[in-house]
Length: 66
Image (cartoon, rainbow, N blue to C red; front, side, top):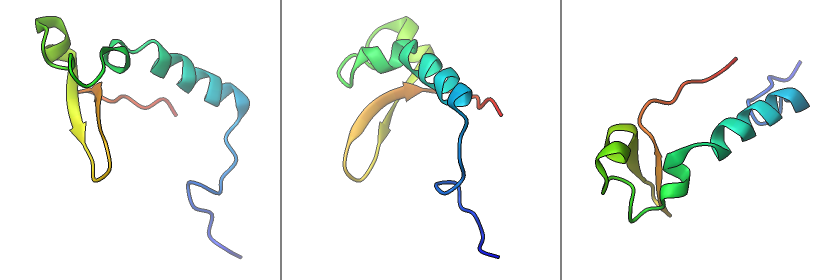
């Protein structure tokens, strides 16, 4: 039997909604790349993630709900 990777497994609609709600409400996401660590309150919570293709603002602590 073939091994299921993370991309292949089916994620329930409820889990998708929970994740989407958490991500949308994040103040770091809304901050944008320029304001990510500019203000004091955001610099405590957010960090600038730099990848090969793009740079974006994200939360420092990334808690995952199983």
